[in-house]
Image (cartoon, rainbow, N blue to C red; front, side, top):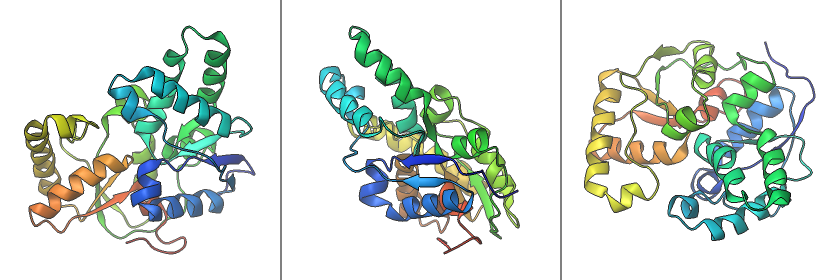
Length: 251
């Protein structure tokens, strides 16, 4: 079923999509608009603050968080292509303002209207089939922050399994970390490399042609390792898969 009414939402593109994966943003916009979303893009948006927060710079993160909250204050709903960034907002923002009741209230109001892409489609629009067609073998990586912090597990898989022509293959140990973990991959690069190698072993073992995911930093990390190992498996964001067959193809 295609069509989600005429809901209004604002796109929070996130840093990685903005700087490195513009096509993911384009696919996201096309999918949402085709399914009845009146989408806008507030100017002035910036990083969600997660890198600073993860490194313990809470005062600096609070400055960034206030900017983000102000930018999207007039938005009815906010949707983003990153479970990790959404988890940062849901769990990090309220704790930043524990000693500031005014900003804590504003943070909680922002949290209440903020969604990860697949979560928004399934839980808010009430859509499980966006009308995509993709004749490929696809497996899915469940990213840590999205599943463990945000609590979004089944929504992206529901959408993928309802794509016409797709051969969906469950990924063994799908909930294992890919090894990126933000600054962890830089501070503990040897351990990170071992973790992503194990993840890649499982991906290759599925025989999939495409690995889909909902967090671009995870996909970037896995894609790099697949490439270094000579694998031809294509790495795509869920939005790119759902954009297939309904508009300009991303594959």
